[in-house]
Length: 312
Image 1 (tube, rainbow, N blue to C red):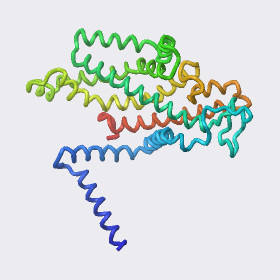
Image 2: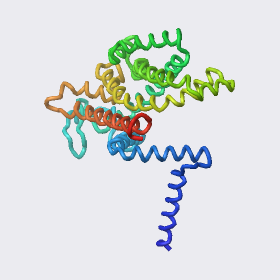
Image 3: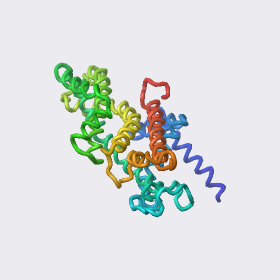
Image 4: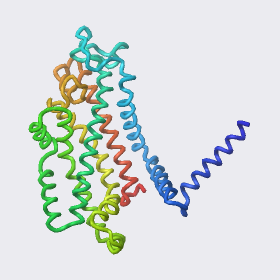
């Protein structure tokens, strides 16, 4: 009985694969599923991109399961255990207040994911709207919006974020707002360039002749075609967002103590770097691994989503 099940399962898998890879889809759902499957096959051929996806998946799982897998509370000090080296009791040692570093890194992944997601939610749509409106409208609207974009691009991102945080006050929410305000201009540039190439296309002209208004053309026709380029850029910018957030935390302008933010952990452990190196080094390694994961994932998505690349 069991031997007969395997051929049936293989036939089912083969039938599903043929349904996905058919050149004559019978429905819109089948066509979209087929495109997604082809994109996934192209993505999985890039081993480094798969590694990046694995790192980000691990980050998400760590953030979700941190209360369950962290051996200690991240913020409760124990001065009798301060600056303990790695052991079976504290796998990654303890910091200057006796707090378990592993637990703080696990909980810090939640703050990192929180910053990354909120910045992407704020900055990417803002840049996408500004870029598509500027590229579609042209003329004075384009000039005004792009000059504002140029002003933001003229300053280094970290310096501009420091200025906004100094005005808003220290804190994780203000740091997110500051990073988002400084992150949208590149997305606006990309969306504008894509829109300029699309606004006089035949399908746009046809939709306009059918009575589609400007807002409908931008929302339903132009923005969806700009999404792939913006998504790739957002993924590649995640590492920079993490580093900017860590830089603000290191300077005391991001997440405030006792929150286990990785940049603040490095700042707190820098005075012990020579003798108790693990206090500052291990959060830095966490930042490096997560940033590398986003970069690898972004490269893989660029190969899949960019029609001008050779990966598709």
